[in-house]
Image (cartoon, rainbow, N blue to C red; front, top):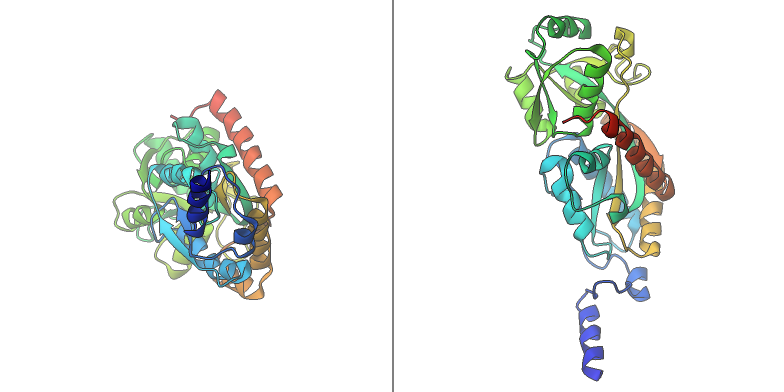
Length: 325
């Protein structure tokens, strides 16, 4: 018995704990005592990567205890590789992830990941951005109507790209095809950075990504946005028409929040919830959000969990009636 006690004490002293054991109260109050790994499911350079790296310094500030967050990209299978790893991580608060919706739930429907929505705890969300369709500035299409007319005349002959299969941008394209009767060839990429390169190099006609990434290219004249999938025009890109203005009832966006593996102590979830809220309220962070064309939409831990569950229900119903594979 004494040997067993000493073995457990040695494990805790080394900074770990046995699977299934709660994190000691002292470790929770001193959290974090070592660097935190934040996993991302996509390559560097995309909008998810940008959102994580912009928010990390503020989350460090509000987590306290000289917190340090190391952002680690683990791309593959439209984020599933990272989500599998996050679900299997030790629930001690030192491995967390940036969760992107609806891709997190849609990947559960057309593949067999090792996670479900109960595999995680949800800290809170910071951003929610509509998707856009963009093309090269030297390409043949100057408007969404021109591209739609070309696709109608040549079904399947025009290639558009985005990250992954069954991902949020892929589903945005599918939504457009369903409401319009158009048919495109789809090119999946590991991340949108590769898709942008393919569009700018003339290898494909266009791509789909969130407005925070594409509006910067649009303003710099390195790409042209043909339409935004929101209810109304965005005041920071008011020359870009909505899909609805072009007669296509398409609304699609991506929400980004933070979570960890199920089983994390409630106190640590509360700490993250508070850090995310304070980040969303921070004037410096809000100025950066404005500068980098992100769209701030804070959700608390409970709101984010409810949002995830609703996305699971909505896209599950779509999959049962109209699977996208």
